[in-house]
Image (tube, rainbow, N blue to C red; front, side):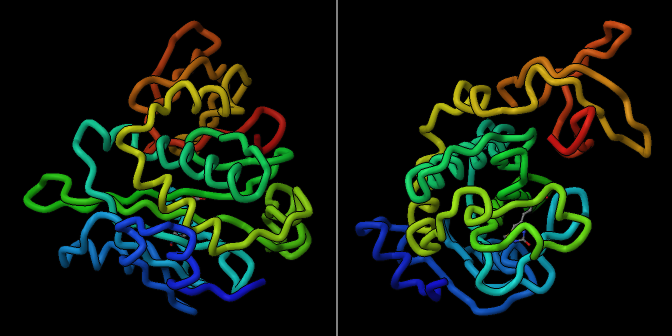
Length: 259
Ligand code: BTN
């Protein structure tokens, strides 16, 4: 894979103001961790941290994100969204990432609620949005996106081999990470104006499925009905009860597998 550089990424951004705010590192513990630190110190919206490798990549719900050198795009960007936008931010970032992949890799991923990008029922990318508070008010958000780019299915850790994939393993294309990063940053910059709900629903592979809601060690069967304007998953339980589920609380699995 070609090496990453801020200059190469900026070259795909045609003078966009965020092109001057890119930091590229060869190794870091977590790009989200550093982006949060920069945001807390006042970094502007659009400041991004991109690494070739992470030693402690973070996933949702306290999980990790496997991030070996040269095999993926690990990118975090500082956002300063309005309160209204914050609710749907994680879903918007999912749609933006799908669009960037479509533009650069000629593939059209689905979204497993809330924000796993999938192709051939395998997870291609994960998204972790973290919010920083000052005086008990949201002050900034960091959107962290990890995309598996060039990695064979059997190169993932054993516990991920049945469910993980990369752009290369699922499409045969070796992505140009600089192009992907540049297009992704431009899509992220356009988030506030981007209508997202219809596209999210269209891409969402969870809707209409029989799923399990995993919460506090319990697995409840339910049918996934819809996504609301705040990005919550509306489900119906077998007794007819309905619930709108927020992304912070639960994890959702298919009845017969990961999707
Ligand atoms: C998930 O799948 O649960 C979310 C994974 C998010 C991984 C990305 S990689 C770049 C950024 N830095 C991190 O430590 N995590 C996110």
